[in-house]
Every structure is written in structure tokens, then in C-alpha cells.
Amino acid sequence: MIFLGVKRLRLIVSGTSGGIGQAFCQLATAHADWEVIGLVRRPATSDQAFDAVWSEASIHAALEPIGRVDTLIALHGADIVSGPGRSQPYIDRLDWLYQVDIAGTIKLVRATLPQLNPGGTIILIGSDEAYQGSSGESGELYAVAKSAVMSYGRSLALTVKDRARVVIIAPGWVLTRWGQSLSAERRQRLAQRTVRGRWQSPLEVARAIESVLVHPGSAPSGAVIAVTGE
Ligand SMILES: NC(=O)c1ccc[n+]([C@@H]2O[C@H](COP(=O)([O-])OP(=O)(O)OC[C@H]3O[C@@H](n4cnc5c(N)ncnc54)[C@H](OP(=O)(O)O)[C@@H]3O)[C@@H](O)[C@H]2O)c1
Image 1: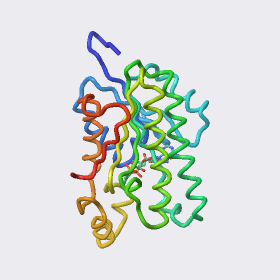
Image 2: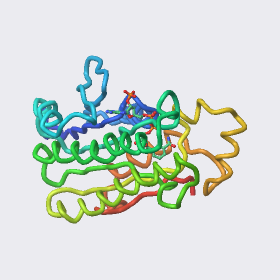
Image 3: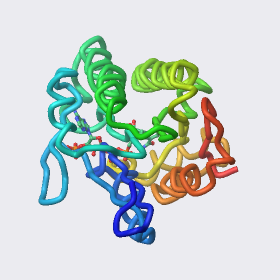
């Protein structure tokens, strides 16, 4: 979009109240030509209300007033590992992840596509842990959800190949809400299971997303970018 003679990049970003979302918004402030519209469950002034469990039609109605955009970054994700969610039955947690991470992401993409400018970018979030395999109930459940999002993203890239670029970011463990709630000992144990023996910071993931936008050639459509500190 051209605004006062300057090309502006309009981005809608879900999950901006989360750790990675906040880090991305922080980085985005350095780009004077970027306009970030956050999609959150509890909106403040400049944000747009959005809940991934809404119907596709409701999400579309919420996005329509925003108008044309150049980028969608879908960062929202269910937290099944802390708080009350952790004690829910296995299948209920699976259903929750399905509703929020899988169906929620697909509905958000489908609702955004009519407003996405030609040549726009869609960035989805997967997980390197999911791809590599991760033990335990939560590991299994996240593997199902994030692998589905990643496979969806790669197929979507083929579907929209003449209209948009689709890139999937796949981080290892990132020190956000859940990680911060763990004991230092548990955090250390989990770090030892990762590729580089350490947690990723939300800023590292945000930088990878920023790089996809600033250096489009570095991430062709369908690419999965692992963020594991390598
Ligand atoms: N942290 C990790 O180790 C890691 C690793 C790989 C991938 N990821 C993925 O990266 C993404 C961001 O993770 P994070 O670590 O920043 O998580 P986080 O701090 O827990 O943030 C999650 C975000 O998702 C939002 N959300 C949850 N349920 C929602 C719903 N029904 N509708 C709309 N928004 C909803 C939350 O909003 P509220 O503030 O309203 O709860 C929050 O903004 C997630 O998709 C996560 O699965 C994380």
C-alpha cells in the first residue's frame, strides 16, 4: 500500500499478546514503514479482537474493516502445558489444539486471503520439536498439531503459488510463558534435549520472522525455517 508516497507494509499478526508475538512487535517498531495490526482475544486500542475458535465467517467479519494487507503472521497457539489446561483429559487437549492451532490457523488464512495483496506473505508457526519427535503426552499432542500446520502450510504454498508466498517458522523450545513457569532444573533438563542444548529466546524467533520479510529471497514459498540456534 502506498501512503503519502511511501510504500507501507501492512501486517496482521495473531498472538501478539504472547512471548514471540511481543518480541516481534518490539522488532517491528524499528521499521517505520511497517504497520502491525495485532489480533488478540482481549484487544487494547490499536488491536483487533480475534479468537481462533470463532467461525470462519466471524473471523472474516472481524478482519474486513482492516482492509488490504501485505502479510499475515499466525502466531496464536493453545497453551496445553500450563495452568488448568494441563490437567484436562488427553483427547480434550488434542481437541483444544485442533480448534486453536490447526482449525484456527486455517480459518485465519482463509479469512485473510481475499484481503491479501498480490505477492503477499503468509507466515505460519510450526515446531522443530514436533518434526523431530518429542516424548510425553504434551510432546505427542504438540507434534500432531504443529506437524499438521506445517503440512498445511506447504500445501497452501502450492495452492497460492501465483498469489502469495507461504513460509513456516519451526522453532525449538522458546522461553516464553510456559518455559518461564518451570523450575530451573526442569528448564535445564529440557534444554539438554534440544539441538543446541539451550532454549531459544522469543527475540531469536522474531528475528527469523523479520528476516523472511526483509530478505524475501532467503525464504522461498514452502520453506520451513528451523530456529534452533544453529
Ligand atoms: N514456546 C515454545 O517453545 C514454542 C515452540 C514452538 C512453537 N511455538 C508456537 O509459537 C506460537 C507462539 O508461542 P509463544 O511461546 O509466544 O506462546 P504464548 O506466550 O503462550 O502465546 C500464545 C499466544 O496465542 C494466543 N492464543 C491462545 N489461544 C488463542 C485463541 N483461542 N485465539 C486467539 N489467540 C489465542 C495467546 O493469547 P492470550 O494472551 O489471550 O492467551 C497468546 O497471544 C504458538 O503457536 C506456539 O505453539 C512455541
